[in-house]
Image 1 (cartoon, rainbow, N blue to C red):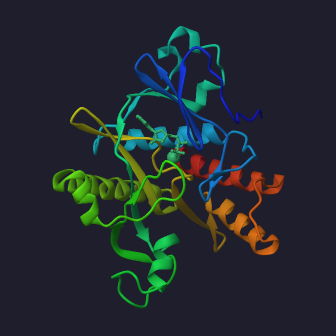
Image 2 (cartoon, rainbow, N blue to C red):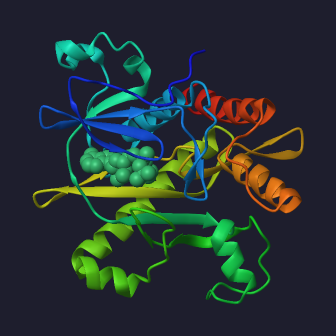
Image 3 (spheres, rainbow, N blue to C red):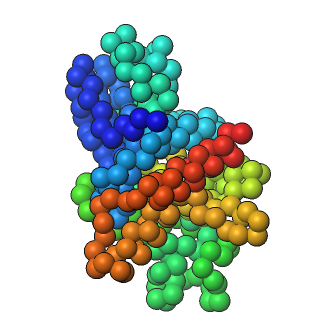
Length: 282
Ligand SMILES: Nc1ncnc2c1ncn2[C@@H]1O[C@H](COP(=O)(O)OP(=O)(O)O)[C@@H](O)[C@H]1O
Ligand SMILES: [Mg+2]
């Protein structure tokens, strides 16, 4: 399988090369191309994960479809037939691209957590949350928790309180986005559960077109969410945590994180992402 690390579409202006996706301005809309790049701890690795962009696109499209009754999303088309003629020669676009509505990004990450994991677990053991005592890592929370962060152009996203969010966005929009985020997570959790998958937490992004708010970016992918399944009595992490754990382990041994990963870890990530796609779409 060829690996698409970077795209080079000469016909249209590159608006942004994100950590994972390349965005082009296509006649006032945005062509989002999910590449095979992978990032962790705010850095893009040099290693390419063949097919990852295709799998992420398929998973996002599945979730956009399954949440469109909750909120309108940015997808216009993922069918090359609807794209301008001069894009059709780029065969790699077939499974890894979408033509979407251009929105003004609301500069926060709307994180919802159903389980005690990641940075919430860290804050919990430091006594910095209002959660009840006696919970263990990966326990289900009494109810989904909304833990937004800033969306930093460079570097690390910082937690923001709901009060701060209200100050920045206004009470009405903050409340709306909190409620929608929780509903989206619950929908995801419910559908995934029927397929034997647990979604521990996830991150949404929203954008504005005029006064209308829509769901943008990617939705409930293994890049933006924690996915778990239980197989033969063993819990399997089927998401980017595989990479984070590997990088941390190397850092412990070598004192710094590598910017490349070996073939067996690439395979493990590919298998995890593919498995989630197959379970969800199957
Ligand atoms: N409909 C949209 N309109 C404008 N920007 C969008 C839209 N959907 C996603 N984006 C932005 O495109 C980028 C997607 O690429 P990504 O690789 O995730 O970048 P990042 O490194 O910022 O996470 C994100 O910055 C996201 O906010
Ligand atoms: Mg992103």
